[in-house]
Length: 579
Image 1: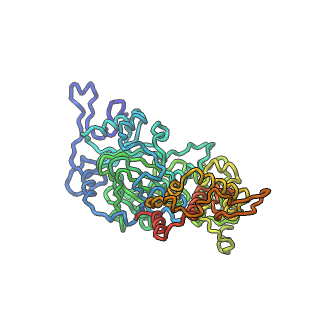
Image 2: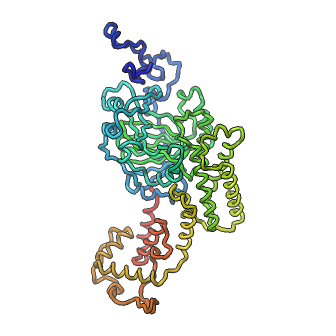
Image 3: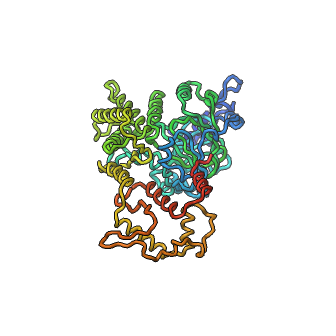
């Protein structure tokens, strides 16, 4: 029967031994419930004779888990300021270990205040929305209306431990309250490559609300499609148990996942090291592709999170997807239209590689290796004996055979050029490998951008450029006192403890700000007593790259007011991740 038809919640139905309808209940009393005989098995009616092992999620399991000791995740995670977590940083250093950001500052992550409650979630999402709920003690899924779950959550008397980890709210009013971290948005395949006119519905996997009561537990898993994931704890606390995705650990994980005794074996005991990472209120954790992890909610908690595919770990993403297929993971628990987005990405990366080669640049090694892994997967999906299984997710506007042929040709050319070492431009930080879908509408967009980056580094400023810079400098100095100017320079250099200079100590050249130090005749400079020109932002070929523009500004500041050696070292240290 359908539980809703008889007024019984789905997760309660398994507890009923003999159901009495409302009419029968008048004569025979309420429905008879199953008797509990143990606290360590998913089937709590089994006799507790000590012969069967503890299963994951049960009360006994959670108690034992809390008593275990683990090596600290500080051995493997990277602690950073939000402003340091940039696309350029990850492209240079890789995204291979979890990253913890203790504060929101600089992340670009916008969230409701910590006072935001589960009642507010119901108000913004709607109480009638049907959500997936996990009965933790049985590690079983069931359906429930959000209103009923909120009623359960706010009740201090909770007969069960129920956990919500898959409430995606992009299509609700609550979506307006949350902006995902900048780094997740900039790297995301869906944000960059999914076309607006696709016949496939766009995957919404970037905004999840997680609500869990104390002792909620999710057993070891890899996020669907090998996605990377971000978590932010709004209030409460979660504990992550992290395992590296080494070849050996991944093989052990696949074997464990397919075992009939999976729930009776703690996977952390099968590997060399399992790290414990406590995520407190206000902390944000980024978990990279392939990391195997379990999660314990140590106290009532609300968290926000999201998943994203990206270019930095394409090979591992595909490896995780193929593992899901071997494990026969239900479609409900896989990344939506994973193969379709791989075709979209392949088409875009083909254009990127072609444009880089035409302009004489070598693509970064992570991208070359990623495209090679993607090419191998596409060839596999197009094999004669497998093509019918994969044809459904091939986009209509893509010619798979032609795309594979062109990708193979470009990769072959890139590898030949690398082996000959003809060009070594070293553009890891500037090659436009993450173009958004609207940018791809112009086939020459990336080519123009790369050329501007190249021209930006070599073009000499014209007389008009120099005149405009000089005019700006003079007008700026006329508008502020020496104290204000010193203050601004001090802030730009990050030296907040430098005292302001009184006018008597202003350098001599400052007193000549209103003198004529630049003399032109018929548009030609005939006398120039100014300091060297350093502001690249006024070049005729202005770069579109924000990082380059910022770096140019910093160069100008350093020329105007050189820091001492010790202060320079302090600035360098400020850019290092916190360990």
